Image (cartoon, rainbow, N blue to C red; front, side, top):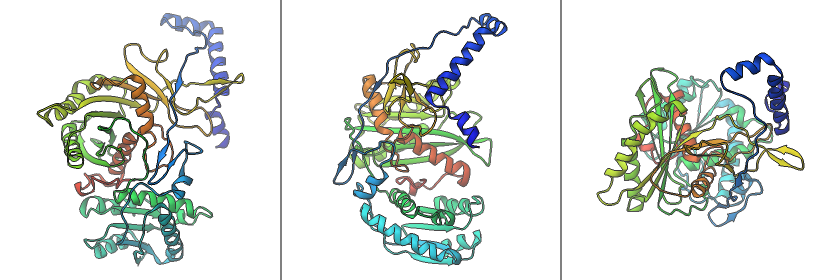
Length: 458
């Protein structure tokens, strides 16, 4: 596998040399060259273009502004400084088997210590020991789940998802809505990893209780950002899951999440008017007014569906934005996001090729002249060549300068609370993906609206 990985994850210089050899071999081959010419195609020389790098971001904590040593991972900063806001975890359940008792106690001690340094107060839970069967775990939840319980944590003995995880998540997301956290025993048994595991789980629990971990500076003060993703249901192939996640505060740290299953053969959503209306109502409740701007990031769309999106999804969004106010309506922009794109960009340093730095934007020469589009590199590649993310603005009422739209997009790549670092796409897109994946793989029905104001799916 290591040898396969080395072949697949070529360095920038290795990839460029491999592509140059391929082009040269085709040019030398008479039959290949003739075939290309019949299609009106030919290989040009290697292309050089000019990009630019947007400024790095500072991470805003509760009482500190930090410039992380590495933009790809600021987990150590999370342990050092207090998170923006959270509520105490006073009443919660922890369910485990007898065999997991020792590791559970050790983990709980570490979790409370980590939480305290983050500003997340974790009281001692009610610990329930059960047999190692899925029915025993579910029965214990049903028996001990009182109205005041804030969260249920299950220490699972097996990663057989359909036996343990799926029934628990389905019950606690739909039938009796309470935030839940599932942890594998083998995860807690990893030597020397307890502190890192406890930090990650404390962050997830904070979000599920409606907390805010960190923020970045957002110059636009009345802005709602939205992520939309569509995923095919694993149980019923005739159904797709549509996920919709919208920010509901000006700092873009609190979220409203909706999900629905619809019968369709395409990945086009027909429920967006209902979702957007709900998000605007939630924004109005929190901010006593409607947002001046709404920017929607739509993931999971191919070139062949762009026309359908413009003709079918954009009007739904426009209609809800227009009908929300009899006075001035919010300005709307819709951006299609594509993680899997063909171009690779390299930067030349000291006569060798390297991956471009984080925040690199390419919006000319490699883009389409008829489109308002750009490439953005917001993730680092530990090995191999970094993948840029492609953004295509298919509708724009906001009139932001391209540089401002690109910088905003880069800022949003810092706000995914399941990873203390930059990710490849804007946070609302990744939240929508996590939500649709949970529903499509485990729940197979619409989650309760009682959980819509928390990131219960992290």
